[in-house]
Image (cartoon, rainbow over all chains, first blue to last red; front, side):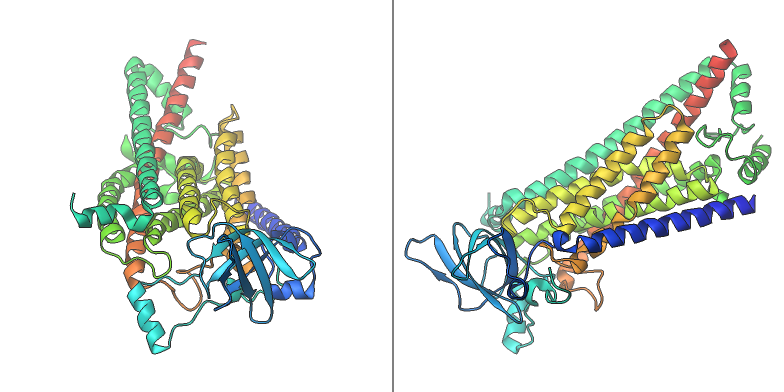
Length: 158
Length: 100
Length: 241
């Protein structure tokens, strides 16, 4: 009786190990497709051509400007190493702010400006009351979110 | 309605999203709870009816098929029946002996 | 473990636990909701939408906890033939599916105003959607067989195969670029949530957990009664035939 239970346990262990390995291999093979966006450094390392892609990073402080038509916004997406200029016509999400995470979907124009057709805001894992954030900023201890929320250059990024 | 109440209900302009989330949570958890209670009740009624309709003879037969346990709800489950001879059944039998 | 293999013993224990779990759940929901809605600050970036977190995150945790516990039960059923393990998995599945649905919809309601979209196919959102389908698949599968032994065997195997999805959900935000932000509570280096927001979150999570315990006991009792009904009906049929 014991041996049968043990054998079933071993079989189950081996099956789960095999399944886990297969999944890990598959996911790492499709790494590029699983990633939802590229960082500006990724774009520099691997120019995307005029494919439809997503770029994610931080809205560079002081880079946001509205054009005369009132709906077109120009800004710069930055990570710790590279920047991309972006232009977008349309409504921005509530969380779109300078220094905050952002994600742009669109195509690279030949002139090197990223023509976005959709802008999503990306927020970080920090939650705090406004007063606390203000106090932290005042005392200079506020640590802004890391670009793209994780070292996007980490592993070929993507 | 007072101003503070209005402000609270407005949720900083995000009322549909916030109240929608809490409303859905309330409805879903309540529906799941009510359905679970109702399911249990109806099965207990069916079980009581079956047992009342069954004379002792059948009852014993069912118990025999179930591994000889007469305790409440102790019928061996059909899903494990047959496959689980051995350790577990010994335990069940011992317990039944104590219960009878 | 087989001390509780006997359904009669389980039922006695369950009868003791049920009222306590139910009472605790009601109390925790009252305290949690009071903190979540009335007595916690808005977020410095997200304002009052952060209150969606107090429903969304407990639902997400419970969706993963429920599935993990079902997978452990499936292993116990396959290896040790524990008679209550399959009863547990069947009873927990609809609750887990409910939590997952709640997580997905509240996430959508949170994503629209903050991210600017109801849905994206990033690794986190997609893997949670797969979790929802795993629950539905399990429920459909165990009800598709006439023979309960085979139904439960197939269900257990599905649960174990699907278990690889759980670490993928948890670490998707660390392994890949996702729109969803990384973990705020269960992370290296401690929570990144202010205590005034962490408390309502933890209370709501405990409320969900105790709610789960109470409802899963109800459902397990129903499953056990169902099994007994089947046995009685089969006995009657064989007596008449």
